[in-house]
Image 1 (tube, one colour):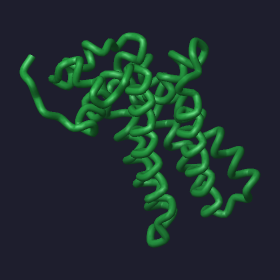
Image 2: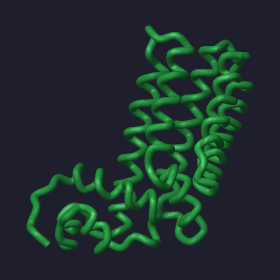
Image 3: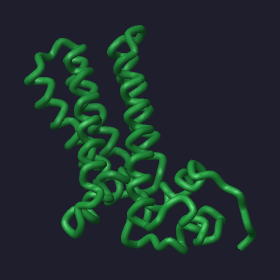
Length: 188
């Protein structure tokens, strides 16, 4: 394999789709290094072990999602309708365009019962997902308690839609979950 200079960010960008599609348990460091076109030893320059790599991947995905979700939700110049359109685009980009669906849910399902090493990052991601939708619901005039309950239901519905989209190879499940979210937020 040729020597290629690559940054930590480039390594993470190339590793995320592999982990999303193959999972943590089914992705070896050798396979991940091939996906990055670097020597396996190069991973150890950035990450001391696979667990550290996975934690960094989850933190990177979480950071990207958090930044983009709240940039939309907290934008005072956009209407609720505009925010929903932007959120739908973000969700499709993250959950539908890539093979494998939601890397956080996949990693949780795969590892949480074996070794909860990634649990805090996964919980933080889902809490941000719920909080973001909760804020949007409050902007749409729902009271705090109702907004919390509805936001939790919506995240559950969306994640279920992602799972069924993967099982049946049909995006209608995610599409319908997002449509249901939109109707509730817009009170249609």
